[in-house]
Image (cartoon, rainbow, N blue to C red; front, top):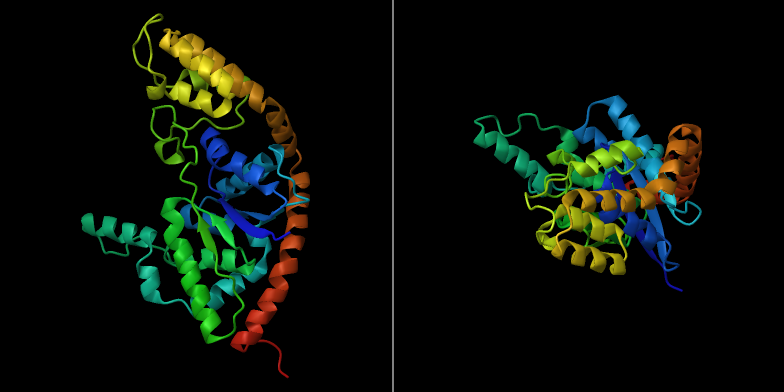
Length: 335
Protein backbone atom coordinates (compact mmCIF):
# COMPACT_ATOMS: atom_id res chain seq x y z
CA UNK A 1 0.00 0.00 0.00
CA UNK A 2 1.33 3.43 -1.00
CA UNK A 3 1.47 5.90 1.87
CA UNK A 4 1.48 9.69 1.85
CA UNK A 5 3.61 11.63 4.32
CA UNK A 6 1.69 14.54 5.87
CA UNK A 7 3.28 17.19 8.09
CA UNK A 8 1.51 19.58 10.46
CA UNK A 9 3.09 22.27 12.65
CA UNK A 10 1.44 23.86 15.69
CA UNK A 11 2.82 27.25 16.77
CA UNK A 12 3.25 27.41 20.55
CA UNK A 13 1.90 30.86 21.34
CA UNK A 14 -1.45 30.29 23.00
CA UNK A 15 -3.91 28.02 24.77
CA UNK A 16 -5.96 25.70 22.52
CA UNK A 17 -9.62 26.69 22.23
CA UNK A 18 -12.83 25.13 20.90
CA UNK A 19 -12.18 26.56 17.44
CA UNK A 20 -8.76 24.87 17.27
CA UNK A 21 -10.36 21.59 18.30
CA UNK A 22 -13.16 21.66 15.74
CA UNK A 23 -11.22 23.16 12.86
CA UNK A 24 -7.80 21.55 13.19
CA UNK A 25 -7.08 19.13 16.04
CA UNK A 26 -10.05 16.76 15.72
CA UNK A 27 -9.80 16.31 11.92
CA UNK A 28 -5.99 16.00 12.04
CA UNK A 29 -6.07 13.26 14.66
CA UNK A 30 -8.78 11.44 12.69
CA UNK A 31 -6.72 11.70 9.49
CA UNK A 32 -3.61 10.39 11.27
CA UNK A 33 -5.41 7.08 11.86
CA UNK A 34 -5.62 6.42 8.11
CA UNK A 35 -3.27 3.49 7.31
CA UNK A 36 -2.37 5.24 4.05
CA UNK A 37 -1.07 8.30 5.91
CA UNK A 38 2.31 8.74 7.61
CA UNK A 39 1.78 11.71 9.92
CA UNK A 40 4.35 14.09 11.37
CA UNK A 41 3.18 16.61 13.98
CA UNK A 42 5.50 19.12 15.60
CA UNK A 43 5.44 21.89 18.17
CA UNK A 44 6.70 24.90 16.20
CA UNK A 45 8.49 26.61 19.06
CA UNK A 46 11.09 28.29 16.81
CA UNK A 47 8.20 29.88 14.92
CA UNK A 48 6.70 31.00 18.23
CA UNK A 49 9.76 33.18 18.89
CA UNK A 50 8.80 35.35 15.91
CA UNK A 51 5.54 36.36 17.57
CA UNK A 52 6.30 36.05 21.26
CA UNK A 53 9.28 37.17 23.33
CA UNK A 54 7.81 35.94 26.61
CA UNK A 55 9.73 32.74 27.48
CA UNK A 56 7.22 31.68 30.14
CA UNK A 57 4.37 31.92 27.65
CA UNK A 58 6.21 29.95 24.97
CA UNK A 59 7.11 27.26 27.50
CA UNK A 60 3.58 27.04 28.96
CA UNK A 61 1.97 27.03 25.54
CA UNK A 62 4.24 24.18 24.42
CA UNK A 63 3.17 22.15 27.44
CA UNK A 64 -0.54 22.92 26.99
CA UNK A 65 -0.55 22.15 23.27
CA UNK A 66 1.35 18.88 23.66
CA UNK A 67 -0.96 17.83 26.51
CA UNK A 68 -4.00 18.73 24.40
CA UNK A 69 -3.06 16.57 21.42
CA UNK A 70 -2.12 13.65 23.66
CA UNK A 71 -5.26 13.94 25.77
CA UNK A 72 -7.44 13.96 22.65
CA UNK A 73 -6.02 10.67 21.48
CA UNK A 74 -3.09 11.30 19.14
CA UNK A 75 -1.46 7.89 18.70
CA UNK A 76 2.24 8.64 19.03
CA UNK A 77 3.13 5.08 18.11
CA UNK A 78 1.71 5.74 14.63
CA UNK A 79 2.29 9.47 14.25
CA UNK A 80 5.68 11.13 14.79
CA UNK A 81 5.14 13.84 17.43
CA UNK A 82 8.12 16.05 18.22
CA UNK A 83 9.29 19.51 19.24
CA UNK A 84 10.92 21.54 16.49
CA UNK A 85 13.78 22.75 18.71
CA UNK A 86 14.76 19.15 19.50
CA UNK A 87 15.80 18.63 15.86
CA UNK A 88 19.12 20.50 15.43
CA UNK A 89 19.27 19.54 11.76
CA UNK A 90 16.38 21.91 11.05
CA UNK A 91 18.34 25.03 11.95
CA UNK A 92 21.35 23.91 9.90
CA UNK A 93 19.14 23.15 6.93
CA UNK A 94 17.46 26.53 7.42
CA UNK A 95 20.83 28.29 6.95
CA UNK A 96 21.74 26.22 3.89
CA UNK A 97 18.37 27.00 2.33
CA UNK A 98 18.78 30.70 3.21
CA UNK A 99 21.93 30.65 1.09
CA UNK A 100 19.88 29.41 -1.86
CA UNK A 101 16.65 31.39 -1.40
CA UNK A 102 16.20 34.61 -3.36
CA UNK A 103 15.75 37.75 -1.26
CA UNK A 104 13.20 38.95 -3.78
CA UNK A 105 11.11 35.90 -2.97
CA UNK A 106 11.14 36.83 0.72
CA UNK A 107 10.21 40.43 -0.14
CA UNK A 108 6.93 39.12 -1.54
CA UNK A 109 5.94 37.16 1.57
CA UNK A 110 2.51 38.27 2.78
CA UNK A 111 3.50 38.74 6.43
CA UNK A 112 6.51 40.88 5.57
CA UNK A 113 4.57 42.96 3.03
CA UNK A 114 1.76 43.52 5.54
CA UNK A 115 4.25 44.71 8.18
CA UNK A 116 6.01 47.13 5.84
CA UNK A 117 2.73 48.44 4.48
CA UNK A 118 1.44 49.12 8.00
CA UNK A 119 4.68 50.97 8.81
CA UNK A 120 4.45 53.11 5.69
CA UNK A 121 0.84 54.00 6.43
CA UNK A 122 1.92 55.03 9.94
CA UNK A 123 4.73 57.20 8.56
CA UNK A 124 7.45 54.89 9.89
CA UNK A 125 10.46 53.35 8.18
CA UNK A 126 9.14 50.36 6.20
CA UNK A 127 11.24 47.91 8.24
CA UNK A 128 10.47 49.41 11.65
CA UNK A 129 9.97 46.57 14.15
CA UNK A 130 10.55 43.89 11.50
CA UNK A 131 12.86 41.12 12.72
CA UNK A 132 14.89 38.77 10.59
CA UNK A 133 12.75 36.02 12.08
CA UNK A 134 9.66 37.49 10.44
CA UNK A 135 11.51 38.14 7.19
CA UNK A 136 13.05 34.65 6.98
CA UNK A 137 9.99 32.81 8.30
CA UNK A 138 9.19 31.18 4.92
CA UNK A 139 12.67 29.62 4.78
CA UNK A 140 12.31 28.06 8.23
CA UNK A 141 8.91 26.74 7.21
CA UNK A 142 10.50 25.28 4.08
CA UNK A 143 13.18 23.60 6.22
CA UNK A 144 10.49 22.05 8.43
CA UNK A 145 8.72 20.61 5.41
CA UNK A 146 11.63 19.58 3.20
CA UNK A 147 13.56 17.94 6.04
CA UNK A 148 10.98 15.18 6.33
CA UNK A 149 10.00 14.76 2.70
CA UNK A 150 6.41 15.79 3.34
CA UNK A 151 4.25 15.20 0.30
CA UNK A 152 1.15 16.88 1.67
CA UNK A 153 0.90 19.81 4.09
CA UNK A 154 -2.55 20.89 5.32
CA UNK A 155 -2.66 24.70 5.31
CA UNK A 156 -5.13 27.55 5.38
CA UNK A 157 -5.55 29.68 2.28
CA UNK A 158 -3.28 32.32 3.83
CA UNK A 159 -0.44 29.77 3.94
CA UNK A 160 -0.55 28.67 0.29
CA UNK A 161 2.12 31.22 -0.62
CA UNK A 162 4.53 29.66 1.91
CA UNK A 163 4.04 26.28 0.27
CA UNK A 164 4.78 27.78 -3.13
CA UNK A 165 7.95 29.29 -1.66
CA UNK A 166 8.99 25.94 -0.18
CA UNK A 167 8.58 24.35 -3.62
CA UNK A 168 10.58 27.16 -5.24
CA UNK A 169 13.42 26.79 -2.70
CA UNK A 170 13.43 22.99 -3.10
CA UNK A 171 13.51 23.20 -6.90
CA UNK A 172 16.40 25.67 -6.84
CA UNK A 173 18.41 23.41 -4.51
CA UNK A 174 17.59 20.28 -6.51
CA UNK A 175 18.72 22.01 -9.70
CA UNK A 176 21.89 23.58 -8.29
CA UNK A 177 23.16 20.67 -6.19
CA UNK A 178 21.31 17.34 -6.05
CA UNK A 179 17.69 16.17 -6.27
CA UNK A 180 17.26 15.55 -2.55
CA UNK A 181 14.00 17.31 -1.75
CA UNK A 182 10.42 16.18 -2.34
CA UNK A 183 8.20 18.95 -3.70
CA UNK A 184 5.33 19.32 -1.22
CA UNK A 185 1.71 19.90 -2.13
CA UNK A 186 -0.53 22.26 -0.17
CA UNK A 187 -3.75 20.65 1.04
CA UNK A 188 -6.50 23.23 1.53
CA UNK A 189 -9.78 22.02 2.98
CA UNK A 190 -12.44 24.43 1.74
CA UNK A 191 -14.91 22.81 4.11
CA UNK A 192 -12.88 23.20 7.31
CA UNK A 193 -15.11 24.10 10.22
CA UNK A 194 -14.69 27.70 11.39
CA UNK A 195 -16.20 28.16 14.83
CA UNK A 196 -17.68 31.45 15.95
CA UNK A 197 -16.44 33.08 19.14
CA UNK A 198 -18.18 34.78 22.04
CA UNK A 199 -18.94 37.88 19.97
CA UNK A 200 -20.07 36.09 16.81
CA UNK A 201 -16.85 36.66 14.88
CA UNK A 202 -14.43 33.84 14.05
CA UNK A 203 -13.08 32.36 17.27
CA UNK A 204 -9.53 33.68 17.44
CA UNK A 205 -6.93 34.74 20.00
CA UNK A 206 -6.62 37.96 17.99
CA UNK A 207 -10.24 38.87 18.79
CA UNK A 208 -10.03 37.80 22.45
CA UNK A 209 -13.28 35.89 21.97
CA UNK A 210 -12.18 32.30 22.54
CA UNK A 211 -13.46 29.55 24.80
CA UNK A 212 -10.40 27.60 26.01
CA UNK A 213 -10.76 23.92 25.23
CA UNK A 214 -10.24 22.45 28.69
CA UNK A 215 -11.79 24.99 31.04
CA UNK A 216 -13.01 23.53 34.34
CA UNK A 217 -16.77 22.91 34.41
CA UNK A 218 -17.75 26.10 36.24
CA UNK A 219 -15.60 28.29 34.03
CA UNK A 220 -16.85 26.55 30.90
CA UNK A 221 -20.46 27.22 31.93
CA UNK A 222 -19.62 30.89 32.54
CA UNK A 223 -17.90 31.19 29.19
CA UNK A 224 -20.82 29.66 27.30
CA UNK A 225 -23.23 31.94 29.12
CA UNK A 226 -21.22 34.91 27.77
CA UNK A 227 -21.97 34.00 24.14
CA UNK A 228 -23.61 36.99 22.50
CA UNK A 229 -27.27 36.53 21.58
CA UNK A 230 -30.12 38.78 20.42
CA UNK A 231 -33.02 40.08 22.49
CA UNK A 232 -35.67 37.60 21.33
CA UNK A 233 -37.80 36.32 24.22
CA UNK A 234 -38.67 32.71 25.06
CA UNK A 235 -41.35 31.49 22.65
CA UNK A 236 -40.19 33.76 19.84
CA UNK A 237 -38.75 31.84 16.86
CA UNK A 238 -34.98 32.17 16.52
CA UNK A 239 -32.88 31.78 13.39
CA UNK A 240 -30.44 28.90 14.05
CA UNK A 241 -28.28 29.94 11.10
CA UNK A 242 -27.66 33.33 12.71
CA UNK A 243 -26.75 31.96 16.14
CA UNK A 244 -23.32 31.26 17.63
CA UNK A 245 -24.96 28.97 20.18
CA UNK A 246 -26.43 26.81 17.43
CA UNK A 247 -23.26 26.90 15.36
CA UNK A 248 -21.15 25.56 18.23
CA UNK A 249 -23.87 23.01 19.02
CA UNK A 250 -23.71 21.75 15.42
CA UNK A 251 -19.93 21.26 15.70
CA UNK A 252 -20.32 18.89 18.66
CA UNK A 253 -23.75 17.25 18.23
CA UNK A 254 -24.87 14.33 16.11
CA UNK A 255 -26.92 15.01 12.99
CA UNK A 256 -30.03 13.86 14.85
CA UNK A 257 -29.43 16.18 17.81
CA UNK A 258 -28.59 19.05 15.49
CA UNK A 259 -31.92 18.62 13.70
CA UNK A 260 -33.74 18.53 17.04
CA UNK A 261 -32.03 21.71 18.22
CA UNK A 262 -32.87 23.44 14.95
CA UNK A 263 -36.51 22.63 15.53
CA UNK A 264 -36.23 23.92 19.11
CA UNK A 265 -34.80 27.21 17.83
CA UNK A 266 -37.61 27.60 15.36
CA UNK A 267 -40.08 26.84 18.16
CA UNK A 268 -38.62 29.63 20.32
CA UNK A 269 -36.30 27.92 22.83
CA UNK A 270 -35.10 30.35 25.54
CA UNK A 271 -31.49 31.46 25.22
CA UNK A 272 -30.76 30.33 28.76
CA UNK A 273 -32.04 26.83 28.01
CA UNK A 274 -30.13 26.64 24.72
CA UNK A 275 -26.91 27.64 26.49
CA UNK A 276 -27.55 25.13 29.29
CA UNK A 277 -27.90 22.33 26.76
CA UNK A 278 -24.82 23.53 24.88
CA UNK A 279 -22.77 23.52 28.07
CA UNK A 280 -23.86 19.97 28.90
CA UNK A 281 -23.04 18.75 25.39
CA UNK A 282 -19.58 20.34 25.25
CA UNK A 283 -18.75 19.39 28.83
CA UNK A 284 -19.82 15.76 28.36
CA UNK A 285 -17.84 15.55 25.12
CA UNK A 286 -14.63 16.96 26.56
CA UNK A 287 -14.72 15.72 30.17
CA UNK A 288 -12.74 12.48 29.64
CA UNK A 289 -10.04 14.29 27.62
CA UNK A 290 -9.98 17.13 30.16
CA UNK A 291 -9.18 14.65 32.91
CA UNK A 292 -6.30 13.23 30.85
CA UNK A 293 -5.14 16.77 30.00
CA UNK A 294 -4.99 17.84 33.64
CA UNK A 295 -3.10 14.67 34.56
CA UNK A 296 -0.54 15.37 31.83
CA UNK A 297 -0.06 18.99 32.93
CA UNK A 298 0.63 17.72 36.43
CA UNK A 299 3.20 15.28 35.06
CA UNK A 300 5.24 17.19 32.48
CA UNK A 301 7.87 14.46 32.55
CA UNK A 302 5.38 12.19 30.80
CA UNK A 303 4.90 14.77 28.03
CA UNK A 304 8.65 15.26 27.74
CA UNK A 305 9.22 11.52 27.38
CA UNK A 306 6.74 11.37 24.50
CA UNK A 307 8.39 14.31 22.76
CA UNK A 308 11.86 12.84 23.18
CA UNK A 309 10.73 9.54 21.67
CA UNK A 310 9.23 11.54 18.82
CA UNK A 311 12.47 13.45 18.34
CA UNK A 312 14.40 10.18 18.08
CA UNK A 313 12.06 8.98 15.37
CA UNK A 314 12.18 12.33 13.57
CA UNK A 315 15.98 12.42 13.67
CA UNK A 316 16.10 8.99 12.08
CA UNK A 317 14.97 10.94 8.99
CA UNK A 318 16.69 14.29 9.52
CA UNK A 319 20.22 13.09 10.31
CA UNK A 320 20.78 11.07 7.11
CA UNK A 321 19.09 13.68 4.93
CA UNK A 322 21.23 16.48 6.32
CA UNK A 323 24.34 14.37 5.71
CA UNK A 324 23.32 14.17 2.05
CA UNK A 325 22.65 17.91 1.95
CA UNK A 326 26.05 18.70 3.49
CA UNK A 327 27.75 16.42 0.97
CA UNK A 328 25.86 18.06 -1.89
CA UNK A 329 26.88 21.62 -0.94
CA UNK A 330 30.48 20.69 -0.11
CA UNK A 331 30.75 21.01 3.65
CA UNK A 332 31.85 18.42 6.18
CA UNK A 333 34.86 16.23 6.87
CA UNK A 334 37.97 16.35 4.68
CA UNK A 335 38.70 13.34 2.51
